[in-house]
Image (cartoon, rainbow, N blue to C red; front, side, top):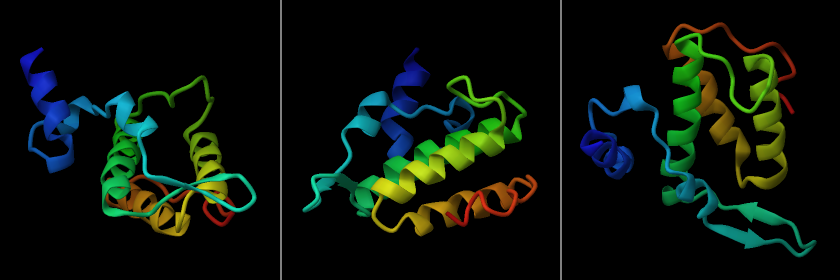
Length: 122
């Protein structure tokens, strides 16, 4: 339990030994910096704090995929998970291509196959 708490606190400092837990505090994903657009939609800002939180969450999912664990949230395939994730980010994330690139590069670094054409190009 102590390690879990320390890793959760150290997540944003990229502490060694914590990556295997894939801990992303739920509060972090609901406490992102946002701005309300003129049309009333909420835009997640591309700032340093959000970058740390979101790349932590995205990285945890890539590591899960590399360990051949099933995708979260009752989604059948990792390809569908990434398609859904990228589509959601494209509509509500400032500079989503930066985050797409992070996932693509991390997947390549873990020797996962490239995503099919059309998944990243939304």
